[in-house]
Image (cartoon, one colour):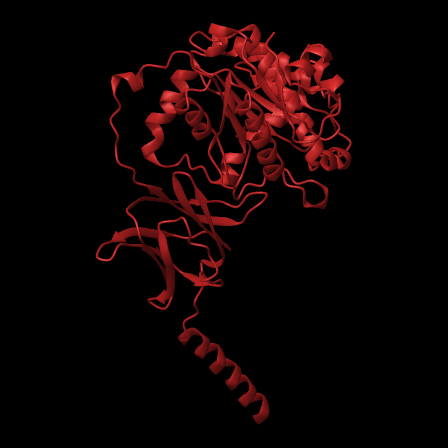
Length: 442
């Protein structure tokens, strides 16, 4: 009886003591950290185990940026980050008020900071994103610079989809869409630059993410005549295959596949961290809506050039659809630039993933896309361009790729082998990989 009494007393005392001991309930752990560099900003991403509240402010002398995160713990370190080519000299983090975390960024340059939280999605946990926008001096332009140049090259903006923390679709053996499409984009640019009538401009030149509206704005800043967005998407069924070309639809998708694809691509802004929650971008969004109303003529040109590109892509890949499809892709909503989204294959299909990772296949696909663009503009040269003034009376340069023969190149450019050899001072039909051939004017 006495033993039972003391046992009960001990239990009650323990329960009472628990009420006296403060229990710290952490809102979230900072589990990992990532750093990305883009041409106009540096992005710091904190991966979190849950939702948090934070406060961001700047300090001077020396220049620092401070992020206070409430009720959190540090489960990672900042010492392994590569700060080269960023305005960050270093990052320090410590516990503050026993329950909060203070992260301090030591800065080397003046930046315009912006921070926002992102909820968990199918690829990432909760995140805190800190964007450090570069502050560039305002440069006034002369009237001559504002007026578009005469006798200019045709400018093609080449957008490699996804990038940075958004890998895009993942294929067998960890083939990543963002890697494949950037490789393709660079090959297309090289082909365009080898032609005296064209100039290729990469929208994304490295491994970083750009929001859809930012991609079209870059194309507009480059005064592009055509915008192409390169992709290699995935489907739930690994047997799905084939290349496709898409233009914007202002009404609805032309097929269920087009609707599915547009939905998956448009979600990329959520994954990549393009915030639409802040008030400072509302004017831009409103402007975007108003600009969308003026797209009828541009859409017609998009469908026309798309048909040329699709036909040429069909010479190296099986086509998913025989005509240009339409869907509501955000990245194609440019009111004054004909725009296309090119699906170069399904990275979820093991056979197509293997091809898309192959350098030789990428060369063939890039060449097909380039030839479609070249043929369209040869038939429809924009006013004020070299092509409109001189036509194809200027030598084009072709770099011999593995598997090429002189006869195939002659057929491709609609010129006789005899003329091609004479134009290049060749006594033999043998060619070597890497040789630059001058294609005679039409």
